[in-house]
Length: 247
Image (cartoon, rainbow, N blue to C red; front, side, top):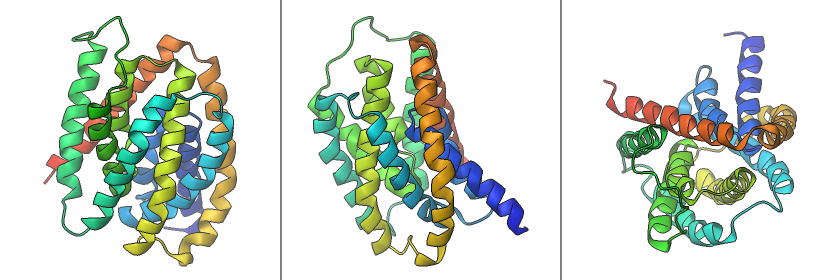
């Protein structure tokens, strides 16, 4: 594959990262698979982590006033536990098996919500127990494949947060997750200075895409935004399930 093709694909992956940090969950699932077209998936995840972290700073600024403090208080320590488990079991636990379980749960949850089953017109409270469980799952799956979105969405969607608060809470939480993943990735050899010069060039399109995502979130009607979130959860969960079940 020639250099021009590599850079086109790499820029598309970085734009997907930026849009997701701007609050659009539907594109987050595309970054690693896109870049995996030109390099091994684990290497792609390692290359994208610095881009996630730089994009996080722009996302944090954009959503500095839009977040749910209680959800963060519950899920910040839980995601740290999940990342620690991912680091400690990097060579022991089957990431496809874990992804398959999360995929099955996420697709069932998203389908039931889209069909209107078991939904309540009233928002559920942010409970500690479920938050710790899904936060740990989010930290673990984010560590292995940058796909911590489904566990977070399973927990947060029933809370019926306003769209900007939902997007901001997600952005802040995963900025934290990406920061603590950095030393863990280094420890297991998923980061390399050899690819850092590539990441530096990709910071620009990713950063610009953050603000494009923020703009889209603010102009998108509330109902359309959460329909997008549910469909994103369903598609990403089905992809995780397919990866786990394929021969």
